[in-house]
Amino acid sequence: MKVALSGCFDCLHAGHKHILKKAEVLSSMNGYRDQITIALNSDESIKILKGKDRPIEDFDKRKRTLASFVSRCSNFNIVKFSTEEELLAIYRTAQPIFIIHGNDIKDTSKITGIEEFNIILIPRLPNISTTQIIEANKCN
Image 1 (tube, rainbow, N blue to C red):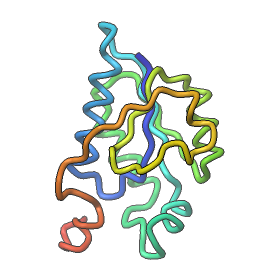
Image 2 (cartoon, one colour):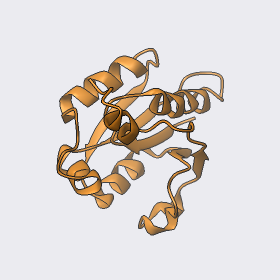
Image 3 (tube, rainbow, N blue to C red):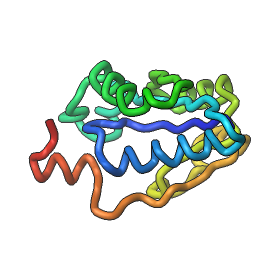
Image 4 (cartoon, rainbow, N blue to C red):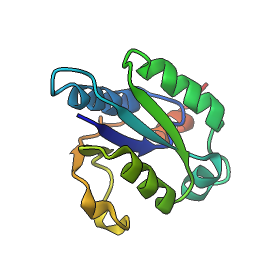
């Protein structure tokens, strides 16, 4: 099944990998690995979302790191986005059966147009976030 997800994926960590592995499982539910589309925030959009000191890793490094982790899945696509409109366009183009998101999202209805998709919220791993990693000074 086609699946899609989005995020900053700054300092790829166990929480990110947890959601990516869930995406891989869902994409294989029909017996073969279908496409996983990963919408990756632009550096500019992360600054708006997370603050002027973010991202820690620039877009190209985040994309390379993400690609190296998901490369065992033969059919993935990483696409850059900066706005909710661009994200929605990516989802419409990918035509996923499911959109996967961490359950930290408070209200998916605030994303214009998202109601046309099936959203699966994946529980976050406790006490793991890029912000916590940065605060502990463990980010490369």
